Image (cartoon, each protein chain N blue to C red):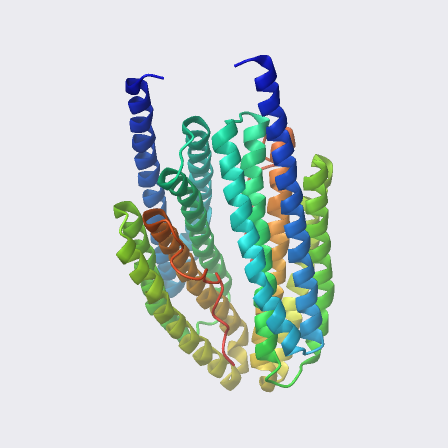
Length: 234
Length: 234
């Protein structure tokens, strides 16, 4: 192989990886908007909007499949190693985490349709701050990914603890409310599940951050953090 | 490249893929046993066993990372295409699904520790049949994977609907119980989450089945089934 050919291949690997990173970040932005739209549909009791959000998840799933396929083709054709191999592995994992975030947003939308069949309960308002915090975590994780910013990734990783604290507070409030008024139990149970879904979106933002750190630094961020590390309180 | 070298590479690809499939199936068996052990710890209110189960999840996570790394190395070195490329993609996805099943089992174990701090509620017995059905689905999905049996994979895919029906029944029973006795609300909420975790294990068994079909038949099993398709009832 001549030097020029080698250089050409290296260049196209970088170009193609950059394109794929751009697609993954765009997919992440779509998933984050799905989360925000799902919360809005929940608060406004808008079942028609919720139906659309749930249906739109298919396009995120389809994008994830296409990106994974392209990433694997790139890997098969280019035989990268060291940082390039880590970048390919991270792209696959990050795309998968974003696909899960989209699933959770769709789940929230579907559950809001169920909730619209019963009387509203006031605590639904407590979910918006949790969702906003989760959306910020996802956006910052995506920013760390697109700019390969390991320090920002570490900050995102640390901030997930704040989301967990807010989740635990909300969990307790919901249980208290359910104990005080048995008629709120069904709606309350669905809100517990929605809160949990949002908390898990934060875990996936954390996963993205861990992958960014791994690509840039070549070592794990720390001991692998369990994906579902928040034990719900009594 | 001589014919002999080509043949050698082809042979080592198959051998290595077979080895990886074996590792993935063994990992799947570990995750299934974790689920069974978590249910036993829950029923027997054995917090010490639950702690061990939660801790053991790290070894499943570590195996998944090692397998993914080996799969990607194989892909980078051997440049497979067509069915071989599908098999590599499926191996990555199936390993990831099994890792999630292990996470859910660990979650159940952690939640059982929380439950042991409050008075027992009788409905905990309803979870065992759900978990047994989920464990059977996972084992059959793994069998379909190790034997590349597309028809068994399709059967597993269809049987997930039975698990969903059982889940919905249990969900309703738990809510009714919580409405009748406010003191059961905290424990009931945790049992709802455990039931949901088991239902999601079924979804991951379904994912494994879809991947087996895709490898063997070269086309999707059907329209991609949403990973979290069960909308909880009112």
